[in-house]
Each structure stands twice: as C-alpha cells, then as structure tokens.
Image (cartoon, rainbow, N blue to C red; front, side, top):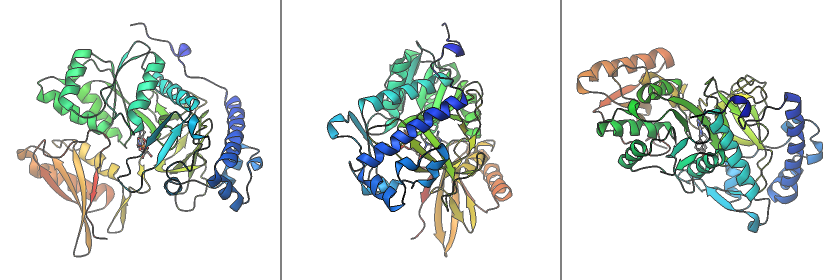
Length: 428
Ligand code: DLL
C-alpha cells in the first residue's frame, strides 16, 4: 500500500512563535467564554479577583483558579456547560464507580475537533488512509470507542467497531478481517494475546502492525512485552473525558519518546500536586489542561491527577511532549511509610522470567500493619523462583517488603477495558 510521506500528513507544523500567538488568542477567548456562560467559573474568577482580561500572555494563566473532578461532580449533570442544551450534540460520562458520575458535552464543532485530533494521533502512530482499524475500546458512555472510531474514519480508514469483550470473537474478527491497526487498552490486548494462543494462533502471525494503546498507565516493560508477543509497534495515546477524550496527546511511532500534546487545542501545565504551584518545564508533577477550542464544556486548568513532566518537542518540534504517565496522585500507595506506584511493581513483574504479565496488587492490613501482596501468574514449577525474584526486586528497587502469591496461569481475572490493578482491602 502507498504510504503517505510525513510532509503530506495531516499534522500541522506551526513555527513555535506562531503557535504561541494562536494559543494566546484561543486562551483569551476560552476564558471569556467560560466566564460569560458558566456561573461556576464566573464565581470562582470573581472570588480570586481575576478577570479574563487579565490574561495578556500565556504565563498569566497561572493566576487563574484550577478546576477539579469535585467541581464537575458538584455541578452534575449540566452545570459546567457553556452553551444552550440544544447545541449539545453528544454527551459522554465517567463510569461513576468511585463516586457520582460526571458528564461531558460536545457541540458539533467540538466533535469535529475531536475527530481531527484523533486523526492526527493516528497519523503520528503511523496509521494511513486506507488502513483497517480494529477498535476494541468500549463503545458507549466511555470516550474510548467512539473517539477512536470517528478519528479513524476522519483519517480515511476502514473501522471495525468491535468494542470491548467477547475475546474469542475479537480474535476471529482480527483473523478474518485482517486489520493493520488495533486500538485497545494494553491490559485487554494481553488478554487477547492469551485468547489467540487458546485458539492455536500465534499472535505474531496476525495482520496487526500498529497498536494504539491508552486509557490506563502502562510501562516500557509492558511495551516490550506487547511488541514481542504481537510483533507490532506499540504506541501510547493519552486523553481524558473532561478535556475531550482520547487524542489529547500521542506518541510518534518513529521516536516512541513520549506523547506530543496537540497544544493548539489543549494547553498543558505541570504543577506541584500539593501546593498547586506551576513547575518549570522538565519537572515532574501533576498535569493540568486548559481547553483552547472547546465550546460546549470548556475546562480551565483542569487538574488531571496524572503524574508526568513536559519535554520539548521532538518528531513534531512545535508540540511539547509529556512523558509517559507514571501514575496518578490518587494511585500512590503508602506502604509502611514508603511511597510507591503500581507502575513500579509492573516493571518488576515484567522483568521477572517465568511470570505472566497479568498481576494484581492487593492491600490488606493485619495487626495494624499494611501489607502489599503481589498476585502473579506462573507455572507451578517456577513458583518459588518467581516469588523470590519479585520479592527481592521490590526490596532492592523500592525498599519495601512485599508478599508474593503465585497463582496458576489464567487464574487472575482479565480486564476487557480499563484495568483495576489495585484492590485495597485495608480497613478505614
Ligand atoms: O481514558 C480516554 C482515553 C480512551 C484515552 C482511550 C486513551 C485511549 P477517561 O475514562 O476520562 O478517559 O480516563 C482518563 O485515564 O486521567 C489517566 O489517568 C488515564 N489515562 C488515559 N490515557 C492514559 C495513558 C480516557 N496513555 C484517565 N497513560 C486519565 C496513562 C492514561 N494513563
């Protein structure tokens, strides 16, 4: 198939000064739109003594108040919308498993921007018009399925709208329809790898060339595992419903060095999660995004709780990158005084010979002492070496004692969408 050359790809290449001018103009318009049409923002800006006119340069954004998930919950369902309801073409919602759900909305223009940034993301991932894209992100209130779907169509691809679940059918569809591209959570792709093997098909023999994985954190170790098992290029896609859905940032398949943020639509900042102070470029902290072009539900300095850092552009020089998300501010486990993230355990499990990449972290408390158990799959004959090696690595690299419970291959529940890695059974 004739591939597009980079110069014809739909990824814009503004000069950095040109981009900053555009961002400032869009930022000022967004602040004004939010202030004029969303009572929540007007009240908050007024309380902080700031006005949209105070934003004269991009750095002035730091003077404005941040927005949190709690603010969205408090204004459920439509309180954050900035347009009359008849102009809203679609809503999506978070699952609400951890509390009250939140609703997000899109005008026709917003949906078009979303398809555009998704098409760009796919292009950066190496996908080209004419390719067939198997979408196994869930369709429905979750933004993954429909977001991927319209982006792939916008790019000119053939879409297989498989959604999540029914793994045997997924394998059948991939085998019969021969897609070059799969879009799915990395944890569900691993479940599909097992399903391929159960069907007696080598995943490496599949038609898949590129996988666009996101919606949950995944490590470089996981990338290596996926690329090895499927013989494909695995790239990272990031996004969140509050900001638009998938397509906020995307890794380039040629460089695989972090995710380019489509900064002409989403303005990033990194702050100290405790003080909220803006940190200089390159520092680790919590990501914030301000939407620059959304109309139905603009977000100002939305606190994602995702931990990362900003890096200069590489494959697309104008667009800064965010490092792979290392965890969330609310993901951090404090185990007997030591702070750790599930991603650190993932790195260890994936580096352990004989252990399957499927694992869970179970937190319990016994005699008022917290205990972390890593439940991991391995064949019976490797039970002892796998357990010893994971426990030793945790002690050495993280500095904590963990219990390792090795279970037979295939016995841990598989996710069909976003994975719940940590089960917290601690009291209180
Ligand atoms: O997960 C949107 C999405 C769908 C992104 C498909 C990529 C692919 P939410 O359900 O609102 O939206 O969840 C957003 O998921 O704040 C992160 O914590 C996490 N997340 C999303 N992408 C990544 C990623 C979608 N690439 C939340 N790496 C975000 C790490 C991710 N975490």
